[in-house]
Length: 160
Image 1 (cartoon, rainbow, N blue to C red):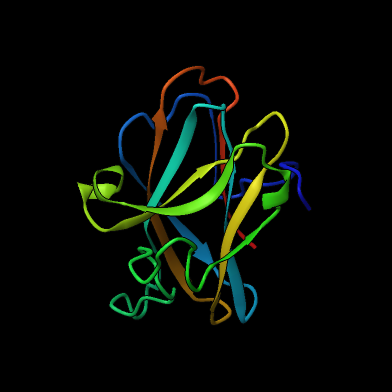
Image 2: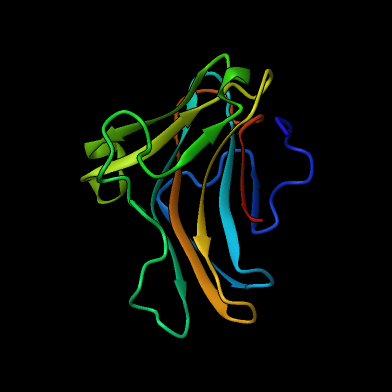
């Protein structure tokens, strides 16, 4: 499970991108009655990904957010209502909550991850209810921060 193999069914990034805040949007058609949104992080030693404003909505009820604590505002040091795993594989810093200018729009909280790519990968995820056949919009904001080499930075987004 603590490997990057087979992940990235929504998005797989490698290298220096995104170098500024970027929103990613995807459609997902439910095939089960629940799903998990999952993010995987691998970084160079002096690089980190910042994740903010995650959202999952059913297109038939787009004003109802299905995630709990989607922008990490109800968190202090760890991501409340989210699950982290494989953090022991990181020689850098596994994901933590940060705030202020590091985050999207330079306000509030966001999730920061600096799991060193040469030794590990860590994941952040949350389950949400679905209705088979319904179409869902998945979105989030992401940036790669820090300085130094960008060759081994990898980010994965999945619905499982």
